Amino acid sequence: MKSADKLTRRLNREPRNHISHSQILLLQVIGGMYCGMKYVFLFLMALVMPLSAMPKLILPTENKAVFQQRPNDFFMYVDRHFEGKASKPWSAGTYGFVRNMKRTSDGVIGTKFHEGADIKPVRRDARGVPLDPVVTIADGVVAYVNDKAKGSNYGKYVVVLHDWGEGPICSLYAHLNKVYVAVGDTVSQGKEIGLLGYTGAGINKTRAHLHFEVALMLSNDFEAWHTKYLGVPSGHGNFNGRNLSGMNGVDLIAKQQSGSVSSIKSYLRKQPAHFAITVPVAKTAKLQKRYPWLWRAAQGSHPYTEITFSGSGLPLWAMPSKRKVTQATITGLKEFPGRHEDRTLKRIKGSGRKGEISESGKRYLALLFGE
Image (cartoon, rainbow, N blue to C red; front, side, top):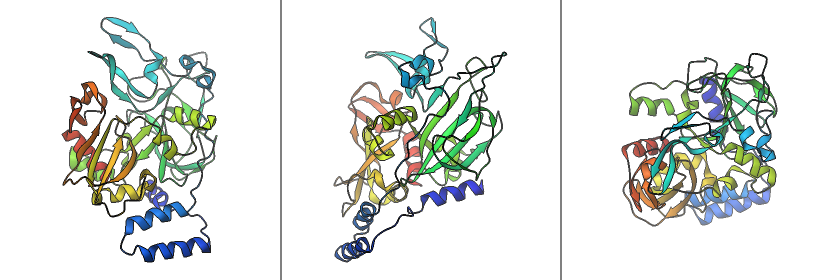
């Protein structure tokens, strides 16, 4: 665990990029003009310093059907029983609110969030055991390995940390049959890190698949938060799934390959928002240090920050705000005919245009802000 934490700290340091003499002079001038305006200076510094580009990502298995307009052959189905009918929808293996269906006045909606993609195997042996190798989507460092089949709902899983100049970005590979790497290993893109399997909760040999995520890390001290708010240690340290806020990794790869996005920042800017909260700027210091690109403008002299989130709580962007608040306050909310609890992992309660932060939501913000 100490090795994993050391890797996290390494990726939280400033990017190691060259900065020219003229850029240094520009920063000195700006620093003198805005002495005491720390956030403006740091923001301009981030603009001047070039970031490492996100490399061309690849899919983590041999299954490429999603790029061939055959999603039913790519995403693993879920056995569903809803309103007396049994079905096996492949859509339940995609990213989003795609499970635990509920009929509402606005139609049938999913109320359980699936944070990754469940990818079908393309090869099996005579007994039906999958044979697909699992590979890393890009160069990185193995930050965490759980090699116990029953040690997590993910079963055996691997987390790889990537340094793309955008803070700690994690790719996660779960339900593995075998693991071929260890914490601290440097892995190149396409490196076999494990074998697709069906370890963990809720799957069997027939539904064997790779659960794949690309995620932001919410906190550098997850165990302390978990013990404080939930009363017991979590296990898995900062690489517990609760501390990794996933985006749609398959969609990210598809959009990058099509040329429509070039970074995590540009991808998240395009994602639909569900709610926004405003807090005193001091609360956001750790988040801004970890992911400075979330800010769409320099914080400047405004003492408040508005952060916009997807329904799952993935932070999408932040802006300085003139709104005066003493604690986290909802200042933006997508109108929804049902209960906001059903589309925010119960972190926002209410319906329509009205909502408030639930106790679960307050705990989530405490994790995000390192409180």
